[in-house]
Amino acid sequence: MTESNGSPIGPTVGAGLGAVGGAGYNFDPDQIAALIPKWEALKDELQADLNELRNASYNVSPPTADPAAASNARATQESFSAAIEHNLHILDYAQKWVDKLREASGAYVQQDAETGAGLNNPGSASGGGLYQ
Image (cartoon, rainbow, N blue to C red; front, side, top):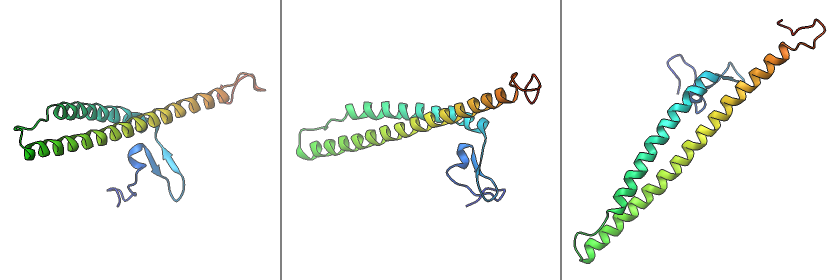
């Protein structure tokens, strides 16, 4: 599968990472930083869904005392339990993405600062850094 410009679509493209030529990756710190609020918004939506699932789960009760109604209520409760468990796994996944995106974003900022400090080191032979 490819994007409209012909470049391949893969799991890293949406994360600000894209293949460059035949080897390597192009990291776009701004694009990575822009993804963080999107993943945070997804987490908020998942949390709202979780609250609704839990509320619905608490309100399951058979309408009558007959065995069929009780069995149906148990099956409904089991379905809600499975949905809640799935939602919790997806919430965990989203949190891990946020953590990794923040880590990657911070690593780029730190690396840029260190590179800048090295280029502007006042202890060089000329009394200033490469770009001073």
